[in-house]
Length: 418
Image (cartoon, rainbow, N blue to C red; front, side, top):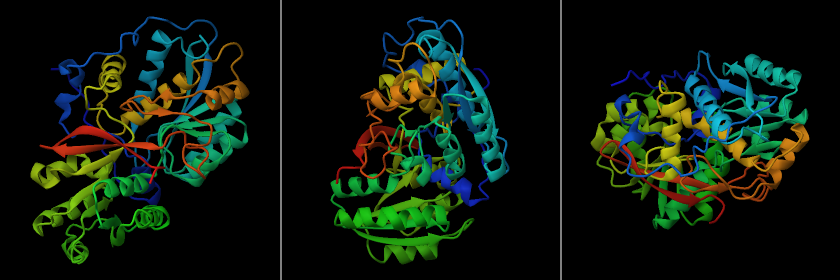
């Protein structure tokens, strides 16, 4: 068996990093590393035209790539590696962009304002026509610099106001609208009340207060928010207080320590409510700490499906196996893959000159682009996917169910339709 690098280890010590976690609700398997090459055992086939050998040629198209890497709060090199894998795949099989090979201009921002600003300014100085951002909690700093220069800001996920409402910003998915999707899901499940246990961070509680609570209330569901201090090892008192309302569902928002303490308390107290969370609470370290029975039937909301036999999921694992075999496919890697390959697909009709204007026009006019690793979800960047959030190109999220410690059974839920 080949050696595969361990999945990311991230130490959350700042609100910006927490914001990344809530914006980045990616689909990952909670398997151990031996399942990294799971495509080999899949019963589904890679799409027949996926490896056409249509290689790019000519002068390269320089595309910016800003990756969250090297910081003290959080470092996710796997997102850059996945974006690079998608680039190699596109150059060898999809004709790059406009038939020309993609050359990446890479900047590693360290999740601090100085490096974020420096990376954004570097992209402007390099005069790239588009920048792919793998994921960041500092989009409010990066996006304005890039978009005001007329450069397309592209990401699979976006949580800041600047990312989801600016001209020249394009977010392939429903962004950080996780709580709205959860409200839709809760309504479909017939829930009458939910309690949200959230890490006590402005990035999390602010989003739940502004968007989550109103979304649940609009769906006719009572909503209660209980905050959990960062690093709380035993959340039993807070969880018990929430369960007094006998909720039908419980939402768990937090980094791994909060997820672990809340899920343990829910099990200790014998909660019968359906547990719901973003991807962070399905991390391998949480599953290990809580135990497979403790996360059984946890519903996890995500922008990607990396675990099923859907052709797009199989393609993701196959591309990663071929072009970046040492990168674990679990966790946040898929955000880099989605961002880069989404740009290639959105500009598939582009011919001739490649510059800021033609890239932007190609993205805005592309219709029903297949979201990479998206379980059949498509995106269109005409500003109508979610009313009031013109930069969001999709309105659908994926819900996976934890069974025997693994994420399974991806289904889809709309954010916009209530």
